[in-house]
Length: 131
Image (cartoon, rainbow, N blue to C red):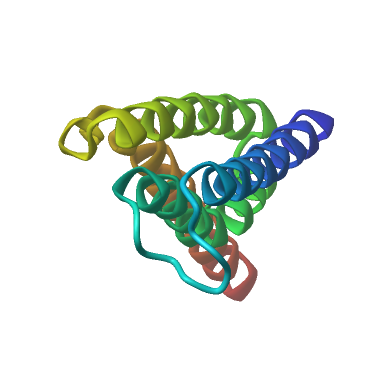
C-alpha cells in the first residue's frame, strides 16, 4: 500500500504545482484576482488546474478502492499512468488546447479502470458476504 500512498502524494503535489503555475501565469499576463479571464494563455493554465481538480476528486478514492479490492501494485501502476497523462495534458493544453486528447485519455482511462475496479470489488465483496 505504500506505493498507492506515494502515488496519491505525487498527484496532490502535481495539483499544487499546477496551482503555482496558475499564480505565475496570473502575474505574467496581468490577470488580477479574482478574475479568471482576460488572457488566453492564463485561461489555459487555469483550466489545466481546474480540470485536474475535477478528475482528482474521482481518481483518489478510486485508487484506494481498487487497491483495497484488487491490487495495490496495479492501482499504483495505473496511478503512474494517470500522473504522466496529467503532465502530457497540461503541456499540450497550454500549448494548443485542441491537442490535449492524448494526455486526457492517459489520465481519464486509468481513472475509469480504477473506478470500475473499485465498484466491481465492492459488489463482489457484498455478494460474498451475503452468501
